[in-house]
Length: 176
Image (cartoon, rainbow, N blue to C red):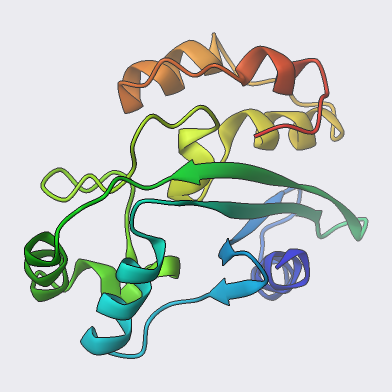
């Protein structure tokens, strides 16, 4: 996953303008020792959703920032425990029919308005969506850059989610 995030950033960095920083990210859903990537078809999406239903799994998002002019690479990974609600077979069928899960790791989007598969998240919502902003800010600090304004407050307002972990992340803890 970290390797894929770095590869994405390296590919883009080849055509980046001078002075640019390039961000790459990759998200993986893991249920125990099984990695759940993007489903190949509707049947696999439904199977993944049934597998995750009513239990916890982890979402890992790697962020890598590349400075093409120097070749500097910095990054980190955010791990978030995700408790799924006990959605019904009918909800799975309707969600899969929407087409939304076919391009999502683990076959779901936490932010989906109708399906809303996650129950009582206590970690980084933005990471489960694919870009943990507080972790990105930590990486950008390694390049001497600070986000403008109150990034955690803006993230929480945008996602309508009272993040319980941003302070720990900003202190440098490996939490998500």
